[in-house]
Image (tube, rainbow, N blue to C red; front, side, top):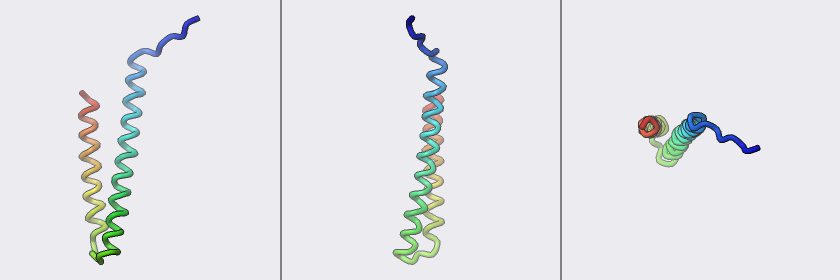
Length: 75
């Protein structure tokens, strides 16, 4: 007997799910690294609100990247 190939719709769904989960991991890593960088800058240069500021910038960057990837995924 020969093996049947999965339908293209099923394969596309799995590919989309994998891309979205990768985007979520990337978003979390960006925010986490921004927080680490902010805490380092805060302790190194005694800049009182560096952690919050850099973490906020990292959140904005992560959202921008996520929206950009979602738009590309929709095409």
